[in-house]
Length: 457
Ligand code: SF4
Image (cartoon, rainbow, N blue to C red; front, side):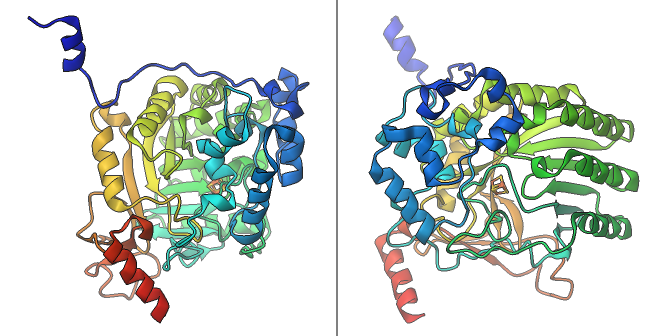
């Protein structure tokens, strides 16, 4: 006979699902927002005007809840390492230590803080950057066929309409182009006027009817004035050859107030209805890395987009140590996306090989293990794929490597199409392309090998 305790043991699972309904954290717990009213909080203009852009503004918000040690750590990072300037909307700050009055230790440990407000002590002292880290690690700029238009896959393009966002993430893979220059990174600049840039993109797509899928991105499309974005999207729909349009916006979670403005909602409905009539799949792709970022306002913005006819809202998160790289964190996030916010868990990208990212990056074998461990809990269609964006190759599922030198942390990948810069490369489809694990995750012998490589370089 099995007693109750045995039954519990029999059904104990590595992860125990428990529904958690979304809660908007109380912003008045922070000294600088003690008197902020709901109508201010829900205003996109108020949110944009009260973004935190520097240490002085962070200090005005938190006051002495945070020790001087934290502020000094932040200044040190901005001067020595940061690849992105600071820009955090109140909505995002409010999801850091969301249900308590923060103190220094809790703020340091917070997963959203770890990637939105990086500090010097977060970075790895020995290997802050991988020796093969580069500014444009995916070579998107190299593959521009018009300013801002990356043609990397045969049937798909990425249209970077602008180089700004309502929020700047410390790990941004487009750190080469996006945001303001920092003391260590002089950013690439878009040079054409926006109307000319958009016109050149449309002209390229008109001349290349084999391209059927456009990711409309940046930066973040939430920073494109709505009438300009709507005109660009209608031009895409008028081409007739474009069958999929994905709008890339982290603002859906960083500034959901933007996507709830009447002008934006009404305009989105016009575009969505036109897309639906013409049989084009219009979707929003957002970027959520932790369950704490999901609040009722995010769910409302998502629901509104779906109600006005957007076919789907999907999440492309980034897998990062200290943020979400555990089975429990990934599943919590996916259940909150799928069950509470109406957002499909779609991809988790491995963090790209940009400078200063080693403390966030995970090894390929760790990503494979995480993919294994999250299988079977979510509906199959809502089980995200963990992907590695291999330089010169593109997205590959993490189990698709062809060879793996675990000692030196080098995985090898192949591909089945040419990018726009490989038209004449006869070996493009037969050679292997390398991807590198963070060196601190390697066995001691592998770490020694890299130290020797560095010394001889
Ligand atoms: S929202 Fe996207 S493009 Fe903008 S800084 Fe973050 S990761 Fe980069």
